[in-house]
Length: 208
Ligand SMILES: [Ca+2]
Image (cartoon, rainbow, N blue to C red):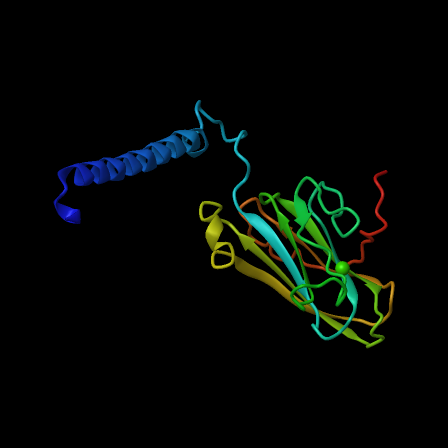
């Protein structure tokens, strides 16, 4: 008589309630742990808060071309960031795509993200590090976008706005070209008339 045994019901109910209470306790503990992050204590001045938004620079080249193209970027007042220096004060290179070697996705792309939008001039270079495919030219698409609102981190791509798109033909191994240089305001707007392609070496850059 399974369901009629009052003790069994009682015990089952207790276990059930305990599980709920444990679950609730866990939830409350999580909320308490998260509270300092959600609501940092103390008054913050605008200088304490990292500038919102970020700059995203992506390059893409044909997936069937076994070429190792490198993206090099430089933010205002920062060191160049590329495969041999994957992080600066502003930019981080997500990964160095070597072409078809060691590639889980089969896609050829590299992306650099900034933390915050620093006003001033940015430079974007491409370097054809290796081209074992010996296919020329290598067509590389370069997209620069900004995400102004940092409050929705999970909607990174939806919330970003494309500023510049370029296609570049790389014609020889070891070639480094400046795709463009441009200025941004602190709000992430392109400064009118600021885009130019004056060459600037980033890969071989050394602090003076
Ligand atoms: Ca690469």
